[in-house]
View 1 (cartoon, rainbow, N blue to C red):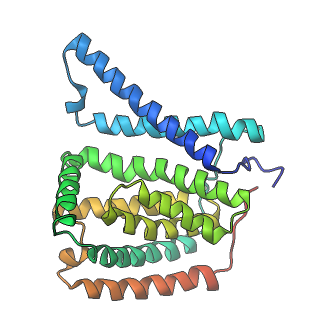
View 2 (view 1 turned 120 degrees about the horizontal axis):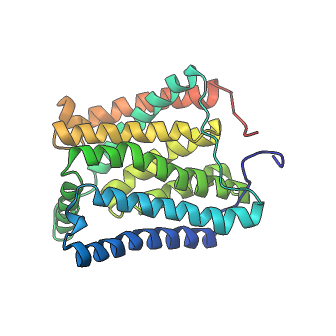
Length: 276
């Protein structure tokens, strides 16, 4: 591993602060640019459909750059670099059905969280209004959720946090779980938290076994594409509503799919890639 072209960095709470600092400075720089633009040209860029997309991109890029320059390069002497190689076709045949199964399970689990009541009702109403604003422009939504989010989020949560924890000596199963929980927390609401943690565990497992960040990116993009299509055409993220079946049927289908392909991927399919 010492001769690997991929730096063997570790992730600690300091690295977390560096990521947060980069994200904050990146997003604030876009806000300051918008303020400057309003003063000079009397135009509010926040009203543009691409503004939020640009803010997210700059924030994520700055966070990754900060971690690279302040953590990775000083400690390893190498620049931040990841494996994005493809794998054999059989791997894809196993991981996509496994992901679909977990998507079904995550939907059922999320449906158990209340959406009404004195507290949950107001919180869910606020969350729904926020999501409606984010999904107002379909093209921008697709670019943000299907292209940008899988790339940036997988680099940070799987490529930096999960990999850095494993390099630090954390048990791989715990590292996958910790990174998934952090992934869920940053979504900022209980409905997305549950799904993000469950799906994050699948993404983390695939990354740990294949060592290629491309695969969790593709799975992440697939999940977000399905959600975007459901929101666009069904007006909800529910497979049960789309297929017109009860939630328990979705759960059963999810358990069967996930269990079968998880077994094939982790027990039957013994290939475990290594970075070189």
